[in-house]
Image (tube, rainbow, N blue to C red; front, side, top):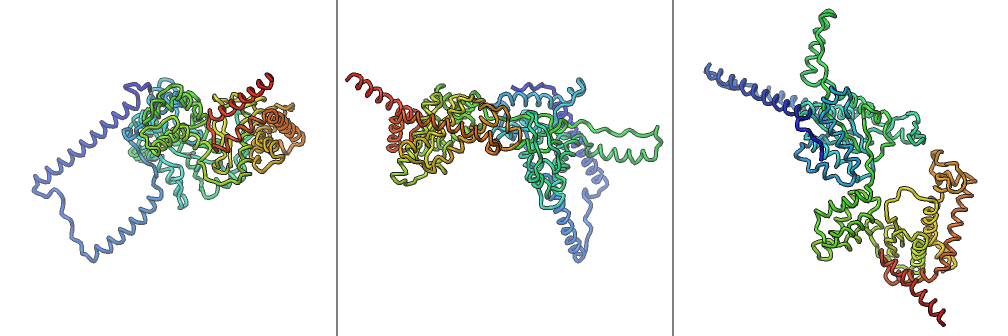
Length: 596
């Protein structure tokens, strides 16, 4: 739960602002009442009579007035802030409902605590609380949801704007919109005791400027500003980024009455000697926070990322297995499901099978499972519905296509070769689906994954993955004496894996990292003569090993091929069941021959 103090600075500011509004309203009401009483006492009408104007004079006056208003309104409208303001009670999400990214939420709560106690923190410690947060990460990881939850928790207005909505066809209007947005943010903070602004997809207006020098990342890699990126940013933007940088340094500009007082005092001070000068009013530190979200943080301008503008960068990753399990529990609590999905083991299985998925993807697959349940006439989803939706999400929707008998046999043999190789060289991997049903651009495919979240791979694991990629090619060669164009994508995947071993991980003898050149790793390895020889050797060794492996286990490939020709698609345990039955049959034949 958020550690919200009952008398934090934001609450006090909001209460003081409320009382000031009540006092102003009371003054206005008293003034109106005095006016009404005075006019009645004098026997005069409350409202003065309207003067009589000749119609021939009134019509052109109204015409030119309307024309002037149209011209001025067009100019004002083109520079108006495009944001939407949400009151705290309009936001239906809290931080407790943002599931699966606990470390990020903990840091967010700390930033929120500093926001609540911004004045106390500054006065007691002399520090500067965070004013800008940058949320970066893949789409669907909860960036926008977290920002909304922060505004709801803080109890302040939430000014949402998409970066693309700042863009305008009129020259200079984009910069005016940015100024108007920050002005609205400062006014909301002064009026409500605090405000949170959120800019979605900020990279649309904050890409790196032209002629920016190369910079060094923390991992030692050099980031260069290419001409194609520079053109995309500089053409037609008219200093938009510069305006954004200036505004993020101008959070504490004086507003309204303070600005008028300072102008008056400045005019008076011009006529006074130095020792008689009237002190100017200093702007109070605005209790506001700006949050921006992007999927491309590395492409943002470095000047935007420095402390003082964005004080904190929070990376939203895909949730780990514990986060995914929490998400499964959270989403299933709101959706109709069979009792089997209440089992802890089944939910663990769903969490493990969605490795690398974002919260939005997990929620979507459960919605698709509900649709599958409705299609079969049920009112609640089952585990089979979830698996069907997950496989469709992972490998695509099956498309009806008529293969020739020769093509069908070839594709089934190819996919069986992949599956048997995976089963033998990486028995720990989960074989999820093997199919000869056309999905997308794939005539057939094998989907397999790690049983647990994996962040690093050993040389043996990479070689096993390369061998799995070679399984289809070797199976075609073994059974047909020739190969087709089918293994093209497999060879590309194997080349990428082998290039990582040779050019980046130092797994083949050379310790020179071609990744340090800044080029694509495959391009760098293929372009280097010595590295290419090592690449060819890794691929040839994998091919030779798989040739021997499949030749020794030809009966497993045949069994899986026949099962695919019969059922077209095998899912999870169905794959291993076919393979175990083939092994049992082989052992039975061997035992029978030994008995004879």
